[in-house]
Image (tube, rainbow, N blue to C red):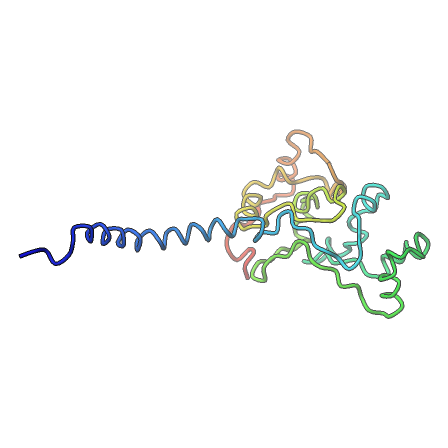
Length: 213
């Protein structure tokens, strides 16, 4: 009696079995790789704002401190965006007729706030309290990079859970004196981070509820 299936049918059957086992694993690995790409994390992506704002000019050239515009970073979970009044505090006297600032002037006249777009936008299930980091010696540059060199601010850190945990497990390299929190390009003297961590008794939590509540 002849075989009901040709011999090559065994090869196809084995391939199907292997595919059935390997496909879910491959899909999981591809998804894990996908969520780490810059397209998902936002690293390097430039965000168009309602008005052009060159941080190089404001921070590096004019020496405006981060906390002048992001006034809530020391006392709130959110650093906050500059209000129109903050912008016009300077621009009512400087470039007060520039076409580039027409949107700002209109915002002041109409009483409608400028709608700034977030560059560093964490998912809703993750909590990042700015005050807890700023007041414990984590500089703005540690998360936001050298904004004083950016014509358009972009994200430099992936802000993934692994990236955050890396800092929580070894915070010393990211710590600086309180007076240097907003200083761009500051480099710590050897051992200063470890000394600050010991003095301030810094031991960041790594359990889930620290950031997910």
